[in-house]
Amino acid sequence: MADARFVHGDAAAEPRLTLFAFGAEHVCLGDRVLTSADWTYAKAREMLFYLLCSRPQTKEQIGLALWPDASEAQLHNNFRVTLHHLRRALGRHEWILFEDGSYRFNRSLAHWVDVEAFETHVAAAKKSLDADQAIADLEAAVGMYRGDFLENLGSDWPMLHREELRRLHQEALLLLGRLLFAGERYAEAVEIYRRALAQDSYLETAHRGVMRCLVRLGERSLALRHFDGLVTLLKEEMGLPPARETVALAERLRDDNQI
Figure: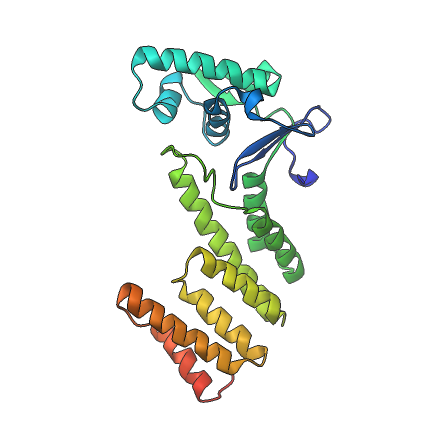
């Protein structure tokens, strides 16, 4: 459910537009999920997300992103038809504005976007001096990340933003893991580190986090087996040993030293 704290525009205006861009993208108008019948063409929904994530764009810029191989005549027809179906699906012409030769998403109308709420929560956590509040913000953020940004779109234009959000998600997971560990919430921390590894199995910061958490949970032998699994993974996949910091941690564990 959309967090009311992050609703943009006139919150009293109805119906509110709610946009989910993580994972399988979808859009709600009020309490109703817009279906393929509402959009008519999938490109209408894609155009909405493109304008949402972009500065004001000319018809030519939009065409290059959405129909890179189209002729000028095809672009003109595709653009006109797609914009018509987009505005019709949203129920108000004013959702997409045309000003000074460019098109843009109208942010003055009430809307909520999971990506923007995610970024806001992560930024708040980084600035927070209260560990509990930072943890709450990070948990809210990672809970919104249901998959990569517009993961079902085969177009090229989302790729850069997709990678940026993956990095921010990874950063949020690692920070959350550290805060949970510092708060002696080791079982929760190890699960967060494992979520980071599910995204990037070579992330040694997360591997070390798992090892430290397992030790604090009284599972030193399991922590060492985790290290052995990392050694095998890196050797078989990359032909490399773990980083010196990871090896040093394993050596301390074998010597039964505190971490």
